[in-house]
Length: 92
Image (cartoon, rainbow, N blue to C red; front, side):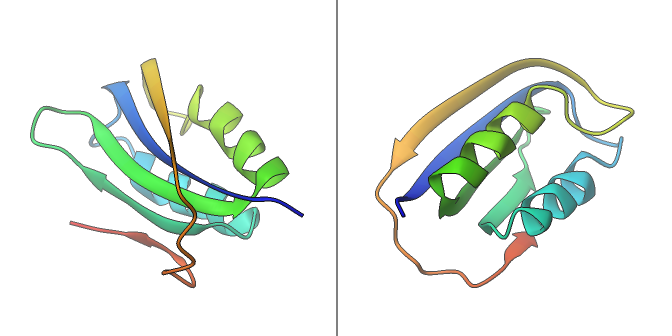
């Protein structure tokens, strides 16, 4: 089984709409590790690591996001897997 790690940037109406909490729930439900945080420019960024199939499902989820968000763009960058985190956290 292949492990994959991504860095993601989500642009749109993604702050103040529960996006980070929903992202954490989606990632935890897929057994992914990593983090999500707000950026000062209004976007949300993070990293996610886990089995390749689960990461692929997560990247699809990011295209829509939380029920109240409006995702305009998602940028994905592949990173080397680190195994550094055990859970998926919301950072400030």
